[in-house]
Image (cartoon, rainbow, N blue to C red; front, side):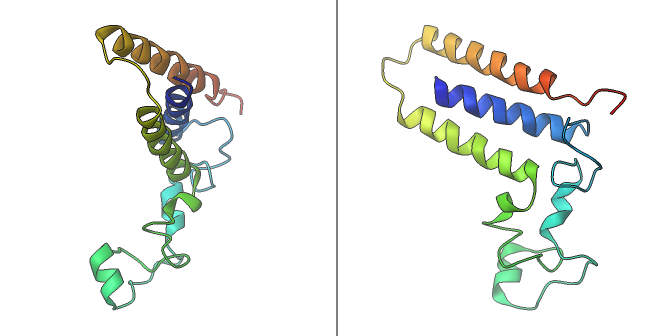
Amino acid sequence: MIFLAVAAAAYGITSRIQHGNFKWSRDQYDYWGNNSGRRKYRFPYLPPTNNLYAKLARLSYRESFPLSATVLVSLTDGFHMTQFFVIKFIILAVIFFRGEPTIWTFLIAWAVWCVFFNITYVGLKKKKSE
């Protein structure tokens, strides 16, 4: 349940970033900004290089650094980093789950998810004066 709680907290951060009022965001383009996903591409935007990797990955623009728009996207901004942790901790929760999957374990897992998601989602909201 600890892994599930961490995944839920990370998902709360991801959701708060998406909604554009994350506590630690200075503007929409910084590491924690709701438009930070553009950091994976080099600015000013240039067309992607004409190679097999760019075609397979269907890159929109030239990357900031090699693989920054694909497997290393979690290093480019807070949204993708927390998404990375959500996925990894859900996988760990499944791997380390011990016991019989019953309706009670589902309800407890759902309650843990809701509590930890809401703690981070509500707790990390930017105040109006910030």
